[in-house]
Image (cartoon, rainbow, N blue to C red; front, top):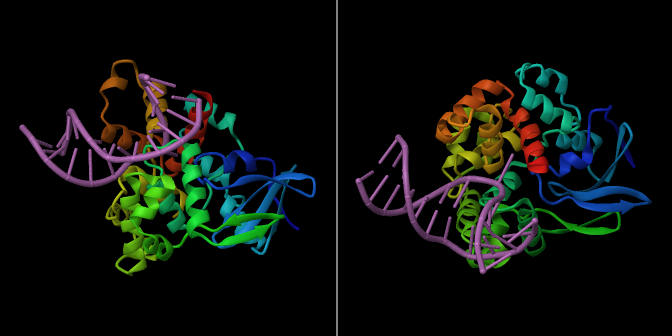
Length: 283
DNA sequence: GTCCAGGAGAGGC
DNA sequence: GCCTCTCATGGA
């Protein structure tokens, strides 16, 4: 059993259910309610008891802490937010223990390609379908789970098999992206060497990846906290809570994007996660 | 049955 | 460059 000190301001359940990752399942182990899932290839069971996070895994406490964002200096991040923003204050008070997860880049990219115009519940279903069909089984806490399929496995599966997994038109983008990576025509490791603008352009080359999904990958997979994805929920809360009745109907998406990045500052994406979770759970 | 979902791409202008 | 239409699927 791995024990990780987390302090007071960390909420495992909210963090795993905030629309960042889509495969963690509730799982009771030795009488403790927790979650079973994968960190890359490693199966993990995690739970929270008071100020500690417990884990059972072949992975290390450092890797688990890094994945969950436990070691992040959140006070320093919060200090860069606008300090006179009652909406953000309300959102942060709603979920003070929410953290950004640092997830594997390919898994993040692939999952968000399948997320287009889908509800969270169905993104979870698609993730499970793909894992079961094309991933590898693992055993943890008495439960069988599956790794996320590699680019090679997705490329090998073919577009038709992906459609059968419930992806619909998203199968094209996922398959083409997997082929580009499996063939070596593209390499996600290249992202680390690029500034944020170039990294976004690199992601936009993949079929099925537009500005919103590119920003999700930068934020959730690359640790680029300035990236600010705007989906229908973010669009809704920004327009309704930050603009008057006339302006909110007329402001264009590009203007809203630029305004948000400027207003929320260098760690805008971290602020975005509080707002997204707050909007989705309370609207 | 109807509406909606962590959007993106193609085509028309 | 911007505007509109279309693309499958399942949950609410």
